[in-house]
Image (cartoon, rainbow, N blue to C red; front, side):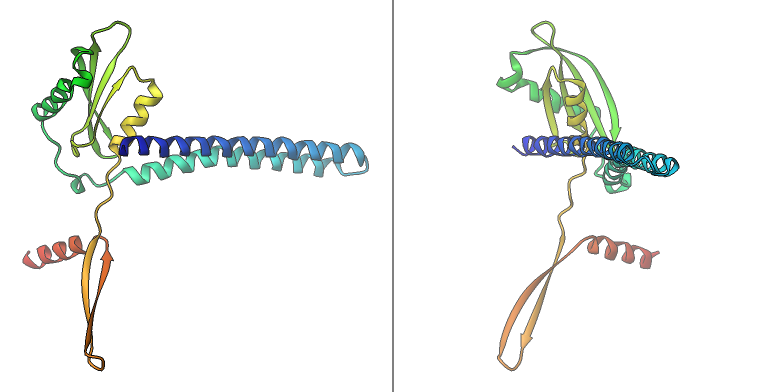
Length: 219
């Protein structure tokens, strides 16, 4: 259920990105059309200014189109790239193979799989991803088992996916799960009313900072 939700979110992002690019293209076309109409109806306008305005519209469109694409890629890399020391230690080949093999014993897949064809590792966003290529019992189809070695609970079986679907799933499985926030309970006493209340304060990374500080003191 969670995987379908992630796929839906990813698809919505792709649609939004595509829509934004089309809006830029349409905006440039409309801008140039209006400029041409104005120029044709006002022959006394300075040609140099018309050319400069036209170039400005085109340049703005190009920057908006490609700039948005570069910004999206940069944000994606920024979200994915983490210090490897922050990740759980990846499980070994034998453990990964056992997970893959256990997935295939599931009645949902057991009758469709013939043999393992090849396997490879990919590092995406600091995560170590194991990709098993499977030959199903029927011809013309290829299946994949994808397992995140750092987070082995993050896995998926894909039957005859397109390159886009495969890459999307790899990226989804490589995304580092959000860490649970640290919580701190604060008790507040009111001597006038003789009452006591509790507030829960949420912090991020506080425990790690305290741990690091203690380690530095020991050194």
